[in-house]
Length: 117
Length: 106
Image 1 (cartoon, rainbow over the protein chains, first blue to last red):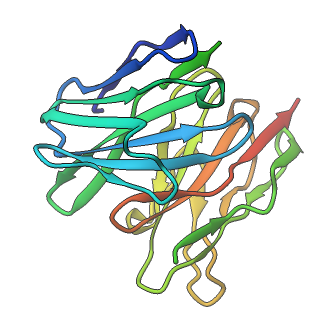
Image 2 (cartoon, chains in turn green, cyan):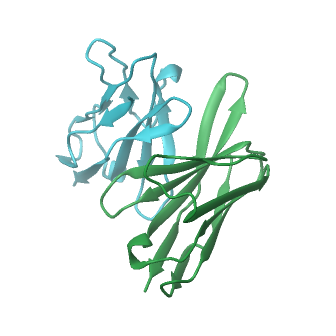
């Protein structure tokens, strides 16, 4: 099956710094990638939809200036958490979408655990 | 608005017992529904989708439009089925339910 990687898998940073998380589709091209946030013992919350070559579409309540998304190529999307604060600590998961014939499938990355001190 | 509800946060059954994980949805159009599973320390992965009408690892799920449900069932649970299960509804993006943690006891 298709593979999606995320880097780093875990990051600890100081409050006020910015952190970049990469999401790559390793063996396929993804015109659309999604970024989710998962709180402890809670479900995945869609943050934004990232389309290659265009601006990301953010969900209501998600600050686009705080969570910068760039989808510069068909295999890479990045999420930058700017001026991170402890409340941004969470598990961030990306997924990449494949459209093949009549099938529309999302493949998920392993996630990145962000801890802001 | 599209919404997915999984009423049970935790579900525990004994090995060999039947298991049903409930999922209800609200959506104005024709829904496309999925079940995803996340085993311990592994990434989220697709288990099955309603349009395929398939059985994966012994699990099946039938879309009931009248009851707006997409419950996941398995007649005989195995210990390796212990995981977190998410029901999801797709429009342009994927909306997930809160998840149900299934524990299958020996």
